[in-house]
Amino acid sequence: MRKLLKSKISRAIVTDSNIEYEGSIGIDKKLMDKADLWENEKVLVISNSSGKRLETYVIPEEANSRKIVINGGAAKKIGKKEEITILSFASRSSPYKPKKISVNESNEFLKSY
Image (tube, rainbow, N blue to C red; front, side, top):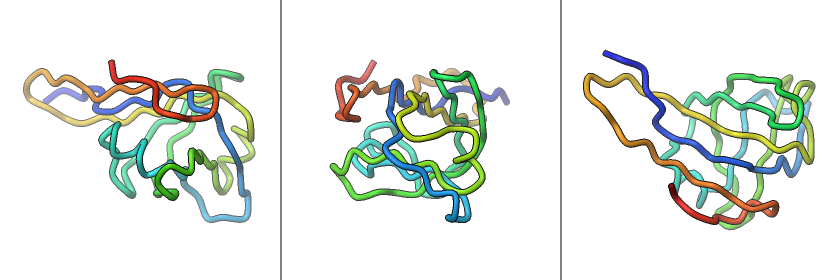
């Protein structure tokens, strides 16, 4: 078994952060579906702005809301208006083509690639 990239959202902009929330990253449900991300799935979040990385889990935000929200202690590492990449991985015994999407500066879906 090898660990491979399963899903990727490129160039998302953090729309809000909430340090009081217990944890997680909220992602627009439409973007979750396009990138094949599930609620509670573990993700790696990379700030393209600062280079900081963190692991957390996904919770859905309202579809078409364009929200990307960093919650809990993660909000001390990655904040509002930062550009991020969101990645998830899966263990596979054979090659796999990941679901990769990119969004614009308003978190609107641009394309799959």
